[in-house]
Image (cartoon, rainbow, N blue to C red; front, side, top):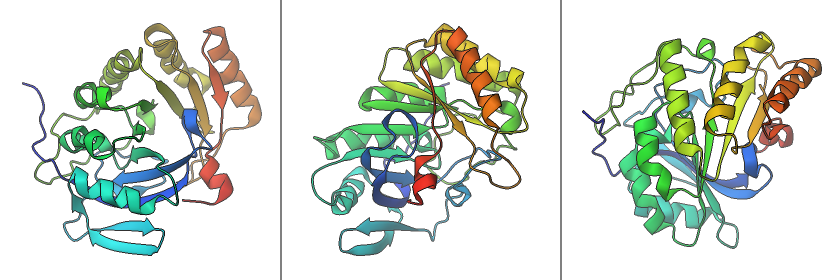
Length: 268
C-alpha cells in the first residue's frame, strides 16, 4: 500500500532571505523555507534543532522589518505570505529545506499555486522515493543528498499526526535501494547530487554512490562538500578530495568541490 500524508499543513521552523551555500545554485540569493521534522540522524547534521516537531514550536520569520514569531503549523498560503515578507526587494527563488521536507508532501504540492512567479527548489536527503516521485513535478530544481549508510544513526520517527508514513531506510541495503530510486526520478530533471565528504571514510566507501550516479543519472552534476567539522567529524585533506574527483571524472561525471558557502561567509 502506498505511503500517505494527510496534512496540507507543515511545521515551519524558519523563513529567511540569504545566499544559497550548497549545490548547483551556490551563491544565488534565495529565500529559505525550512520545515521541521526529520526521522534521519546524520552524524554531521548542522541543523539538529530541525529534527523534532514540538507542538509548542514557533516559526521564526526574518522579515525586512525585523524577526517575527508565529505558530509553526502553516498551510501553503500562510507560508507564501511569510516568504513575500522576507524578500528584500524582487521575488527570489524559494528553497524548501529542513528537516526533511518530504515528510510533508501534501504541503509541498500546495506551494506552487501560492508562490506563482518564483522558482521553487527542493533540498532533500533523498531517502523517501515515494514522496519524491509525487512532488518532483512541482519543483524547478531538486537538490539530492546522497548519503553513506555508515554516516547515519538510528531512525527516530517524528511521531505527529499527518506526517508522511513512508518507511525510512535503516540498513545499507535500504540505502542502496532508495538511492537508486531517487536517482532514477531525478535523471531527466533539473537536479544536482551532493555528497558530504569526511576525513575518516575510505575512498572505496564513496565509489558505489558515484557508480549509481553514473549508471542512473549521468547528466546530473555532482557536488562534493567537505564536511564542516562538527561533533568530532572532520573534513578530508585536499589529496583525498583530488583522488575522489578523479574517480568521478573517470566515470565522466560533472563533478565539483564546493565547501558550504554559508559557513565560509558566516551567514544563515
